[in-house]
Amino acid sequence: MRISTRGDYACRALLSLAMRDDEGPTSVRDIAERTGLPQPYLEQILLALKGAGLVRSKRGVGGGYTLHRSPDGIRLSEIVSAVDGPITLGDFGQPHQDGACDHEGQCVLLAIWDQAGTHMREHLDGYTLADIADIAHGEAPWPSLPDHAH
Image (cartoon, rainbow, N blue to C red):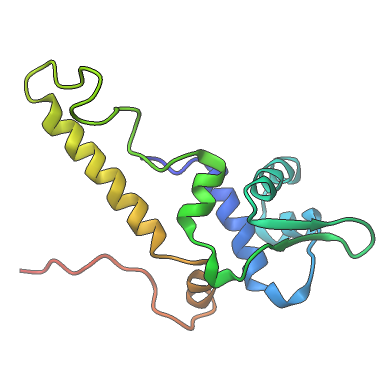
């Protein structure tokens, strides 16, 4: 599973909005400047996020984008899915479907790929924009892998 550039940029843009959630609408130009992302690409991504109901836009002077929900109600998994589609490891299909198990051992691998995709989804479900903003502000511990020391 790769998070696409679109998925990464979408998360960065919404994190930027989350970190200044109390400041009102933010122009695409300001988001581009704060995140270092290219403005034309950012505009496309924000339109997709608006279509998914994650941001709202306000036209005119003082207009721009705001989060549609509070940062603690928006999960990373939703943002990635909104621009990249469902979070899966690949296009393998499900075990025991459509002749997927016609060859020896294949269903075991399909089950493992499926399980890995589920782990990825659950991992990204575990972070809200508020969580990440807290970490970025130094108010919560940095993400770390579980310690597997023997």
